[in-house]
Length: 459
Figure (cartoon, rainbow, N blue to C red):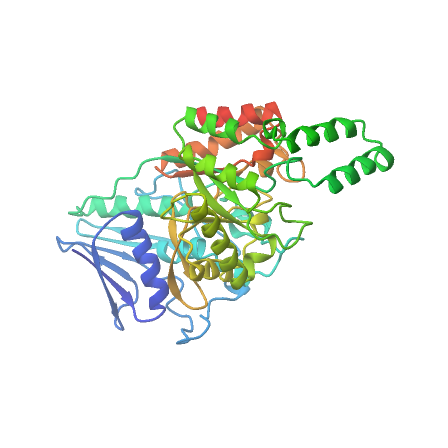
């Protein structure tokens, strides 16, 4: 068994990142020892050969037992990232968040100045989002405030690159264990902000909207929309423009993919949340149909739930109750926050306490990329409670509106968008990662966007 020795401070943080890289990503067996006479990360293989990573972050920081860790300050975020190359880097160079270019390679040992453990912890724990209080109008940490964006490596899976460098070094030293074999996977997800445009409107709302469209907005489609409401109210929901679910599942199944559909359960803010009731017979019927076709149901937590533990628990309980009544039997439960709102570490801790198994939120709304620097699922870490959570993150990598819409990247629904998304997918494939895509049911109406989705899945 591999022996890993770490300094005797910031033990929860060190233990988390060592286990994530060595066990979760590489699948290696190891024994961790904390020692007060060790100044670096020391990995000793079964054959006695050693690999040392210089501690370039935690060693000289204040470790307050039971309290807030001393590194959670905006001044601790690096202002400059260097890019180094050595014989073990998987690509032309590697972004170094913490560390130096020191490298000593012998037959029986390697000493590396790149602190891959602190650097990977920086990306996965998302502590820069706690330290940096800058937010957008929806109280979200924006991509352009991140170190990865400022230093031009948001498009790179830097944590995966650290893992590959680590494995290359272990292989050079003749590690007796084999690594975990991972396969590239595509995860297609669909947030249901509005399952129907017309079908769930009451007569009062439909007539009121008709009057507003005709008198105030001079909308020439007013009568057409009212006629659609009449037909859907008599059960012809197949003509509702937002009811694209069979089309979505047809495409997903064509490419052998199992989709995940995220429903809202307790909408508190109509101006932001979906305007529907999950207990409505049409929604229940839809969820049952999705389940019968072999796809998954998840929770799309409401706009205001991201920092509200009771609300997240309530919304998950409602989802489980409705699923039970409709015969939707699932062992694992997934979540995505509405508007991708996220508060580190409150959101992850609240989801964990509620009993959620997976989250698929962590992407930036304004710029697509690798927010966590990784394309594999990983356990989340509470930087305040200083503990590893049971909740696992499967980072979102592409949301259609982020790439397409003018308010964000503005690449449209043609060649530019297709080329960009395929590049992200190719990066995931290169590292045998998980390509996680979000495409709303309301974005299957435009034939160009529907075709773009199909091209991406086919690639």
